[in-house]
Every structure is written in C-alpha cells, then in structure tokens.
Picture 1 (cartoon, one colour):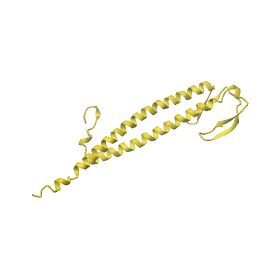
Picture 2 (cartoon, rainbow, N blue to C red; picture 1 turned 60 degrees about the vertical axis):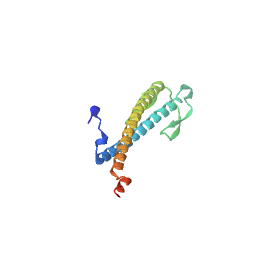
Picture 3 (spheres, rainbow, N blue to C red; picture 1 turned 120 degrees about the horizontal axis):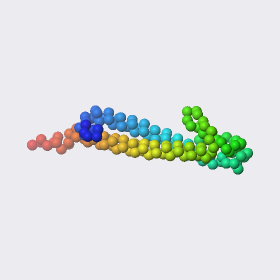
Picture 4 (cartoon, one colour; picture 1 turned 90 degrees about the vertical axis):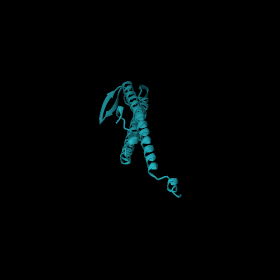
Length: 156
C-alpha cells in the first residue's frame, strides 16, 4: 500500500485483480440502483409539488383528480384548501398548510438532488477504478501469451 490508502494494482496477481474487478462491478450495480431509487423518490416529491398547485381556495368545492400513486388518480372534491396531509415516510403523515407542504417537498427534492450528485461522483469514480483494473488485467493477460514471433525465432 502506498500513501493515501491506494493500492498498486499493477503488482497484484490476476486472481486478486479478478476479485477486485468483481467487487467493483457489484458496487457499481448497487450504487446505480441506489441512484435510480433516489431519482424516483425525487420525481415523486416533484409530482407532489405539482399536485399541490391545485390546492387553492378558488378550487374548494370543485372536482379534482387526487393522485393515489404516480399512475393512479381518483376523482374527488376539494373540501378544504387550508391543510393537506404530507407523507413523511414509514406510514406517518403530518398536517400542513399548502405553503408549508410545498416548502417541505422542495427541501426533500433539493436534499435528494444533492445526494444524487454525490452518488453520481461516486459512481464515476468506481467506474474509473473498474476501467483501470480491467486495463491492467488485459495487459497482464496479453503479457502471459507468448509472442508469435518468439516461437519461430530459433530456426537457425
């Protein structure tokens, strides 16, 4: 190991390189799946913010489409524009006025966006490491094969 906790992958045997490559592939898959989940959550909060725009005093008593899921809406009548229920996770809801609910959702979208950016950087770094390991493995594999010219060099 050199300074900064870095490993010289050029000195590692092929078996260790193969294990390291497999580990990096698994980490990439996990981080990519996590990134997709964060993006989905961020999109849901954004959609909720859009739905909040219909919650205003002039719409009281009017028929609206109430989002139950991202793809399921039901007809409903807006009875009250002063408060909404906000899902804060794990089955808990809090009552807020539409402005507070929008601020909460905006904070969640921003928080998830920041986490997505950090995760993107982490994924990029893992992919660079994976590429480096793959290149070293290819170089070592080609060095193990005998050169075609060397086999016929002893003809004299």
